[in-house]
Length: 171
Length: 102
Image (tube, rainbow over all chains, first blue to last red; front, side, top):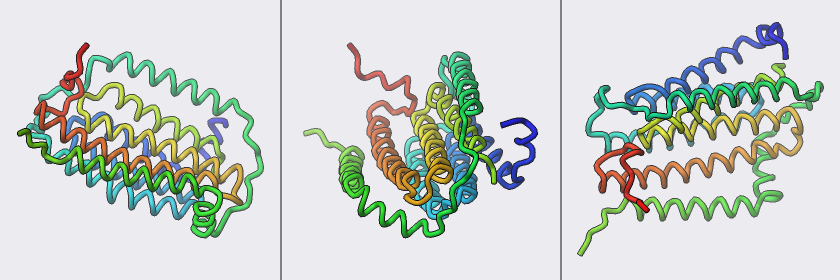
């Protein structure tokens, strides 16, 4: 990948990608946690836009449904239930700010080096049009064991969340 | 068509941003938000490989569905844990959760 190539890619992909990165940085660095949760929701909207470029229409919709519709709402409930003081005066970062930044920057440089150095196949396979049909068939044939394990995991998470969220009365 | 390396670099940037949040935030809900960003970056990589390597089986997209399932369960249990801790400690900051000592 060269820099000239980077500037000649589809404009819409660049818009969605830059929006996702900016919103992710906002979700990580803003002081008010409520704003962070809203940025996370917007970030997942931008990310599902990127999914549509990858011809993953079903996943784009499911991403908005699960993340924006369920997880972010759950987080907002947790924030308004716990946060007494949303003042900006409270320190939101710990003492790892500078070492963490250096570590993450080094990791990003390593990632980019490896990705740019790897020889990706030049030809792109034909697009799969029937995504929902194929995903449904795969879930219930090839990956049926993982599907069942995932359902048991969701049940366990449900029971665990109810148990942990319950007020424990000591006698 | 946009080459695969663009998607992978976008995923790498999102992953690193999420990791920075996990390392530096004090707020436990903020840490959970950062973990969700990291899982989203992993999903992007899975979908990109599913599009550029093999499209007849869509294994990457099926995997992304499982990642979303685990993310949903993790968010539910994590937020319930934070609420339970908040009842005991009256705080949501990770450095205040020092109940376990040795």
